[in-house]
Length: 236
Image 1 (cartoon, rainbow, N blue to C red):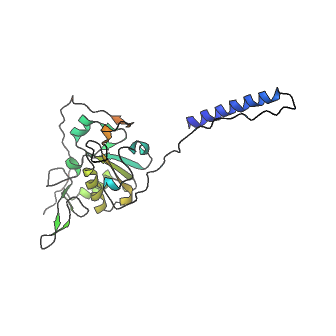
Image 2: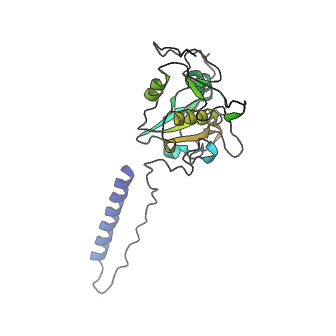
Image 3: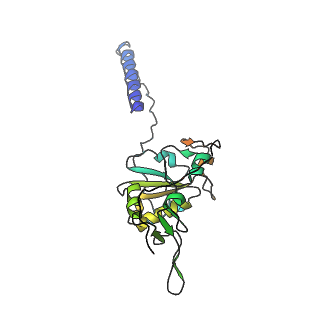
């Protein structure tokens, strides 16, 4: 808004100067119109780009990545989630505007652990063949009767979500978990790697053009514990 106001003021001053110059010239001389330089203003981004492959949780199919995520930060109706560990966030740094919900320490892991909401495992048929891969929709089972309710409290379904991870893996798992429990996959974005780049995917912390990088520190020893309050373990 400020940029538009400044441009309008400049244009008004130039036009006023042109009018004074024309008034002082002889009548038979026609003054050439003054050239007013046009300001190059990029259109304001107000929404996330559409996913070409809405069902995909992969960072390879995502329109967002560490190189363009800065352009899509701080949008209304969008929540930005960092799925790395607590220690990584402290030591490696973070991105302004991202909330921290550690996937492996809070949401899901490979075996049942106290205060982790879900366990993920391969699903096999009667012959032992894998029919659902680890981390895909359908591979998550709740550890507590309240796990799904807590998930909905953490991730209201009326928002879009942008996830970032160490190398994109935790984000993919997080998206697949939400898809399994009814979230619209077209509103779930994997923007790739914060810590470790893969192939052409440059990690955000290594990207020279990063505008909203908050540096980490090695000055602290990180110790964490999670407590969801009174929850009821699922009896297998």
